[in-house]
Every structure is written in C-alpha cells, then in structure tokens.
Image (cartoon, rainbow, N blue to C red; front, side, top):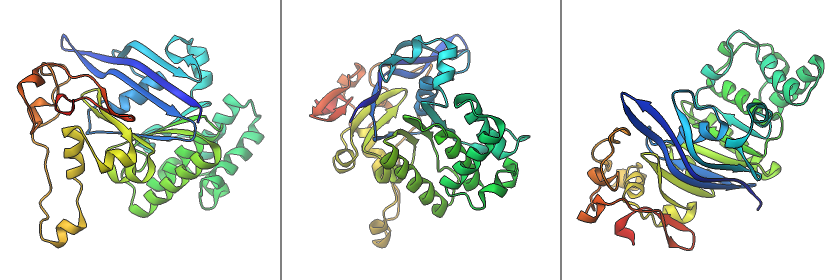
Length: 322
C-alpha cells in the first residue's frame, strides 16, 4: 500500500497563563492508502489537536511549531494558505466530532454539500445540487431529494452525521480524518456509519485516521492503533497485536476498563480504574508523564522514555518494556 501521510516530530503548542501546553508533543505517525489507523486515548490527550494540525485548522494562540506533515510527498506545513485550501475538503477531508456545530444552521443541507462541489469541482449551481443529492443517496440517506431541502435542526443525529460524511466524501479524498464519528449515536446508527466508512476504505482505497476513545470501535475498524497520552504516542502496533498483547501500562489500563460480559456473568462486575487524572499539560512531571498513575512506576521513570521498537511492528514508550 502506498504511503499517504507521514508525520515526523510534530509539535503543536498552546500558550496559557505564562506557560506552554504541548497538546501534540513530538508525534510520528503514518497512514497508507486503504488503511485505517485508530488514534485512541482519554480526552485531552491530543487526538483531535493532531487532526486539526494536519488540516492546519489550529486556532491562535495555538500553533504548530515544529515537524513535518508529508501528504503524498508535500509538506502541508510549508504550503501557502491558498494551496492548503485547495487540498482541505478535497484531497483531505474531515468528519468533525459534533455535526450540529459544524453545519451552518441557516443553510439547507443540499446547499452545504453543493458548496463543496462548486468550490473544488467548479460545477454550476444546478450540477452541484444534483451531485449533492446523489451523495446523500450514496451515504444511505432516506428520501435524499427531500432531505436535501431540510435544515440541520430538522434531522436526527445519525442523519446529520451522514451529511458530514457526504461532504467529506464529495471529492473522493485520498485521506479522511474522522473525529469521534459515532459519538452520541445509538448502536444501530453507529453500526451503519462504521459499515459505510469500511466500504469507503475498501472500494475507494481511502486512508482513514479514526479518532476515538471507544476501543470497541477501534477493534472493529482499525488496521493499526496509536495510543496517545499527554500529547505523546506511547504505543503503536497492528490492532491484532495491540489487543492481544498490550505493552504500555496505560494501554493495559484502558483495555482492562472495558466491560466484559464474562466478568458480569461471574458477578465480577467492578470495572478496572486507572487512578488519578490526565496531568495539566502546562505542568507535566519530569520523565514519564504517566508515572503518577502507573502501577509499575520505578525510579528510572523520572527520566523521559523514548518510543522504541519492542518487536518488528510494535512501538512502546516505557522503561519497563526495554
């Protein structure tokens, strides 16, 4: 598979109260065509900021201060804003976490999708409206012609998410960033959305970065998984390897926190809890940033560990896994 995206040493910071919060801290990541990479971790660990950095949508005072984001050989960080606008929404698209805040409430759904075709495909108004209706049909929207005339508030959460996917897929992007695409959806709609994304990957060869805290979704969808904590990637591996043999104590804790039917059946229903909270990014501990919550902490953890190969395809940032 061809490599679509290669991120090297990416660092995105947010100045705050005289200190610096590094929301993305020296991150390396790659995505191939037709591959889904799951980006997981607790809220505040840097997943969404990584996606916004790729799209160059980080809002001031936040800024990307170092690294490379190579997309099909071009460094996105070095492109002019005009060139980036031509790529954004065209060759790289994004499904945002909350459709209701991403869709314009005063424009009809069909008009908003048609705008993508008018900007990137230079279609006239009638051609763009027709293409918008076809996209709604492709993403499984019931009565697409009627729904194209609706406003966002007239649709359910699942329908709005389908609209976001229709907009993201309008120009057949090579890369799609999906930020919590199934949040707040019921399980039936969630399954339909995930099935649609899998179909896109298989039929179009689209590379997908799936950002989520739901490890069940990751297990179903991802080919590879990168686990983030305090802006760092602490573990990266093929999905099968990570779920079968997690190495970092944080990943182990996340997996143990998933409810299991067999434990419930044996009346062992108490969930595993990772003690403590994600630390303030402005005041991280010296060394390993997970040390205050880690059950395996040792004196050496006062020094910062590096992300190193544990096996041929399993990377871990932990002194205890050397």
